[in-house]
Amino acid sequence: YGSTRPERILAEVKRKATRGDARSVVDTIDQYCRHQEWAMNVGDEKGTILDSIVCEVKPRAMLELGTYCGYSAVRIASLLPPNSRLITMEFNPVFAAIARQVIAWAGVEDKVVLIEGPSGDWIPKMKKEFGLTSFDLVFLDHWKDCYLPDTKLMEECGLLRTGSILVADNVICPGAPDYLEYVRGSPRYESKYFRSHLEYTRVEDGIEKSVFLG
Ligand SMILES: CCc1ncnc2c1ncn2[C@@H]1O[C@H](/C=C/CNC(=O)c2cc(-c3ccc(F)cc3)cc(O)c2O)[C@@H](O)[C@H]1O
Ligand SMILES: [Mg+2]
Image 1 (tube, rainbow, N blue to C red):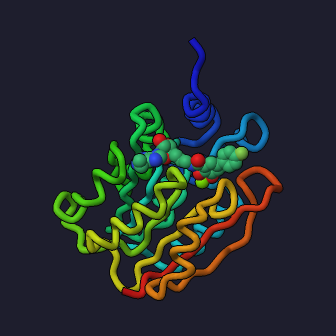
Image 2: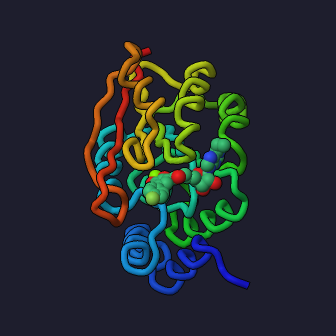
């Protein structure tokens, strides 16, 4: 039976990355996806932009939508201050199982809570389930047509406070046009585009950082 791409990425991490070293897990995945087989991680170039925003915001409570193999969860968790949590949502059980192992190999499992299931089901339950008031930072990297509905749902569920920041991957490629139009057109957001490239390629892509103004 053939393995899946996420399984091959996990195997490479176990073969090449140093256990407990988040940086080596990130670098191993980047090397593999740049030189062996492409995968939809945020990648090294856009990852550096994400890192700078995480370091600037120093979120106590952070949400990621779309874990996939756990690459960005490891990247983010390795930068979180003590007593901070990344909650990451993944609805594909196969990807979730792989991501748990990648996160554990990197030694950041204490900072990451991986929730299995569709974001639309979980977002309304977050406050009660996790005793949360709001998220300081949200990274959107799941299906691109879910960015806008999930953003509206987070607003409605009171998960965003004045100053909460949304960071969206792939606003150019594959693109999230309805989301971009919303955050750029709404008086309730202050939006900024960080031009970059699609992971491991020279194709243009970018990250949109949007501050919720309440
Ligand atoms: C139901 C809501 C919901 N709830 C919970 N988990 C959810 C979910 N919806 C999706 N997931 C999981 O998130 C991940 C999907 C991510 C989707 N990402 C891209 O499609 C993408 C594509 C390219 C690209 C591909 C091909 C090209 F040619 C160019 C660019 C580049 C990128 O960086 C990309 O992020 C998977 O793990 C899903 O199981
Ligand atoms: Mg992406």
